[in-house]
Length: 187
Image 1 (cartoon, rainbow, N blue to C red):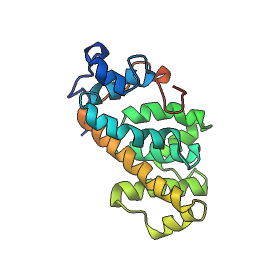
Image 2 (cartoon, rainbow, N blue to C red):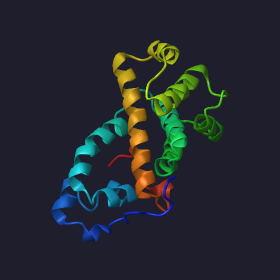
Image 3 (tube, rainbow, N blue to C red):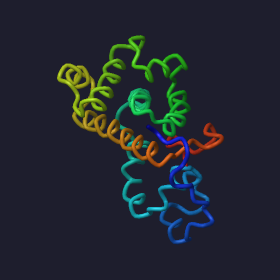
Image 4 (cartoon, rainbow, N blue to C red):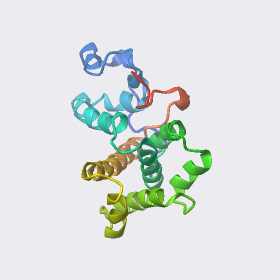
């Protein structure tokens, strides 16, 4: 069951050593205001290794942004994850999704277009079975390159990992999540 209170408290940035803050772009970097950062900076070596991977998926995906958001919304919902979901509700709107489409992606509704239903199904299969079924793979492979298919698996795996981290550590959304830094924002 996800934690509703932090198991590890967010560290005030003035308590983070200057040399550690320098590793992550300094105290003025808007990403560093996130609760996720304020907790994970307490293991700066691990965070420094993870950050390039996460930023690659977040800022430079090769799959279309809307497709990415369908995958993230469904994965986060399946995993009972609230921190990333709170942020991605805003990112999905930036990707042109309506509130109804966002809800359909979260719930895995048949109201989505056929390819987006295949994306939802891929997320469900990866979370449940840790493998995309052949029929779902065939639909995805008709549109995506091999590189994009690999990225899709990494995307769902990353947001499943984030669910484990956020749910276990009790990382909660910022008070004004709509104004918090997002990977689609410029630095």
